[in-house]
Length: 346
Image 1: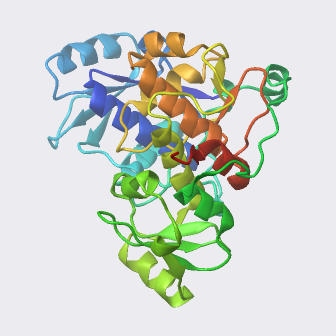
Image 2: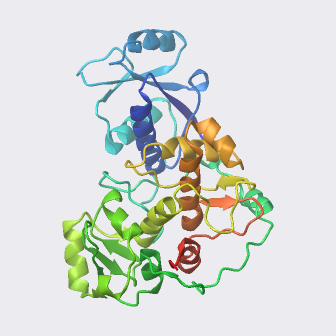
């Protein structure tokens, strides 16, 4: 159970999503000692003091005995603590640590994790978000096992004729490979580390998801080329991040083969939230609450059913989403590639 509770108050929807992402990142660095809760339950209130109602919110919170933090572009604030706008992960982490120390709360900085193939960097941010929800909000292993009692039909490893795609190349490449398609930056793949280089953000790579990736698009490369690409494009990124983009894109509002809207879907772990797709924070928040049908997720999040389905597809292939009664894909490259296979025209 988290030992301190916090709420952000008065922020616009877009800025709220951004600061909550930063909070998750900072909280992970401090050992998940904090949790987000509704305003009446929060011990600490972070208030947008530049908003119309910021001062009134502060007066009410202060009279109620809450610890107050003012987020402002100015240099002074009446609140207990000041958070300069724009905030970043480091400033928010330092703020949480100072508040914890003042409250006599133990702070246990989390050890820096060794990057794993499935870790996904936050687009537009210099460091990755820790992709985990507070323990109190994560479904238990027993719970996940209980809803995935069925078995999904065995997926042949691309046995059916299909258009070769980037997801196939991710699963099949044997050595360093350069991939090129029109309208996109060159992509360098390293199967040994299951990482790619070429773009720190995802949207520039969308042409790779849409293209037919045949022999004319790829060629063997040297590791020195991969290393140079890492230096010039913001570092190496895990294959699973690109596979996630494939899942998000190829269905175009339709669930991947083997899944229907008659099933309930559950987000089993907090995903990496990409700044390029701002609605995903709302979707993730809704889907962490328990198994739900597509229509119910759409209604609760205010996001269209087609966008919910695309988000579910991305989660299915990357292992963050499971379907009730179906065996999880688990982020396996070969199985995910089979799900993403597009039938060959004609």
